[in-house]
Length: 115
Length: 134
Image (cartoon, rainbow over all chains, first blue to last red):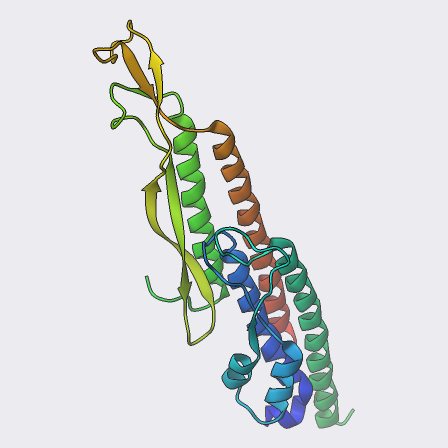
């Protein structure tokens, strides 16, 4: 139902939210020895999601380990600047997607009211 | 403690871990002048060891302090026969704490703490926007 109503934006919003959690995990583990930073390949995840895969499957399929610009001695691959950048970008994209969803809801509400 | 359930759990545990790290560094700084009568008794810097805590169902992973270890820093011997703790050779053992290392540790920890707070604030803002949209 929600898929037909929101189209690509519903799936995108869910994925953005999931990616935000993953990036937060990276930031939280910035000092954990041996931690390997992960990220979601958003394009791949969205394509899988639109191809009929479930949210969890799509995320699992598109989750990748980050390749560090410069590996640290303790095996941790979190680079805080990059994570913050990705986080900010993801937040903006989330906001954009959210406004698409909201305007869609508004359109349908208007149609229902017959204004 | 179980696996992290949501984003706030991740941030909270990350902040707690950083607090432990900051406390340990502060303890080390406070003990940087501590003197002991033998090399074994001398104060050694405390170092928390972080460990990832992964929840495979949500893909979130937070951090926890696996253990607090004593660092392998050598104590410094100082000849001071008048000191009440001096051994038979007239030596006392000062803690092997490097103040610079500890200051850097605290700074790094504070930075990462700030990052977590910022990430949490942004996420919270987005969540509120989502809830309030109609």
